Every structure is written in C-alpha cells, then in structure tokens.
Length: 313
Ligand SMILES: [Zn+2]
Image (cartoon, rainbow, N blue to C red):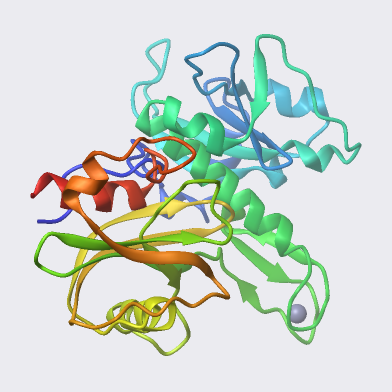
C-alpha cells in the first residue's frame, strides 16, 4: 500500500505553470492584474488570519506598489482556477518576501498575523498549508543564495524566481531551488514490535522513528539501511516505500519507508539518540501521550508511519 492521501504540506491545488516562467508578457500582465494574489512571507513566517481556525491571508497586487516592492522580486507559485468576478484567466499566485523591505520591522496587517508555519500548518486546510510551505521554501532558498557559491558574485532572479543566475561574467552558473532528501523509516520485526527512539533534539517524552539525510552517491534504500545500522546497529531488509512529505523547515523532503530488521541487539548511537528500543503495539496504544511518553506530532510523516503500522495489528 502507498499513500492514498497527501501528508500535511503536500496536496496543493495549484497548477505550478512551469511553462509560464519564461513568458515575460504573461508574467507582466499578471503582475498588473487586480485578480492576482500575493502570498507574503516575513522572516520565514507566513500570514494567516487571527483566531483559532486560521486561514491563509493573501494580498492583491496593489500591495506590491504600496510597499514599494518590485514585481521582479515576486516568485511565481502558479495558477488556480476559479477567479472571482467571472475572471476568464486562472488566478496567478506569487510569493513575496517582505524582508526585502529591508527595515527589519515585521509589518502589521489588520486582522492578520505572521506565524511560524510549524504552529499553524496542521490547523490549515491542506491546499493552504501546502501553498504556504511552497512560498516559504522557495523564498528561504532565494535568501540563502543571494551570492554565487562558486565565485561569490551576486545572483539574479530568472525564470520567475525559480532560478538564480550568477552575475559574475566569467561564471554565470545557474542555481536551482534546493530540496534535501531525507529518509524516515519505521523499523519492525515482523512479529508485532517496532523500534522507536528518543533523539537528543526531540522535545521531552517524544518517541519517534529513525531518520537521516540521504548522502551523495546513495540510493534511498541504501540510505535507510545505513541510517538504521548507524543509529541502532540493526541490519534491515524488505525496505518498502510508503509516502513522502515536503518539510520546508527549511528545505527537506521526507521519504517515508518501512523496513524489517534482522534479529539482533539494539546498539544505540549515543551521539544522536538518548535511547532506542523495541515497542509492542499494545505498549504504544496504551501510551499516555504526555511528557513521559508521546508519539510525534500529528502533522508529521513520522506519526503516520507509526499509526499505519499500529492499525495493522
Ligand atoms: Zn558565480
């Protein structure tokens, strides 16, 4: 079985409109079109409504001028059908980084607040959480690549914000948006037990599955086997893909797997983990969910991997 529903931060209902990124006439028309929507980000924070059930807040294109920002700095996210006022053209969405204003002051917008996406993501409808993850992720990449990593010259936006070109005459390298693949895996013994661990960086009581970044020259299956061996000293086989999750904090793609461990002793890598051990389904189903023992947060693929396994018991 693989994913039959998207994880949180996936599931956008946006057409990314890649073929429009080099269409200068279309882009300038959209940047003048009053139906176009801006998705503002400030300091990595996203704009949502006040209150307990937040929704995304977008601005119209007039806000760009009012703020003194140039349309050239806006990143085309894509288009969405169903424009207001009977608009024939699909509505275009652009991400704008209000930190470009350069004054270091968080803008105030009535009825809205800038929030950490990690706090509001699970509360938003899936397409909105995904839209904000996309906007936050690409603007973070852009901010981290203002200078060429090869020659140090400033970079310039191209392709409606999806490419940064080095301005160095002898260099001119194209820098593409970066996504870091990470594997995350539920390790089980095929007999009703799975491995959960307490990472040194986890909040109190949180027990989760194992995870780690994919290294150069490594397949996903090899990364799963290496990480499990490094972290808990077990050999795995039967590595099966389950689902994936964009994790824009700041730029990961989590690739979820299940793997079966060969019999052996758990040997904890203490440089990364506080503890790791086998848990039965009964133990996890009885777990208190508090600071003595809790599972990962509900919007995470880690939680989903555990819950899917629990449901099979
Ligand atoms: Zn360069």
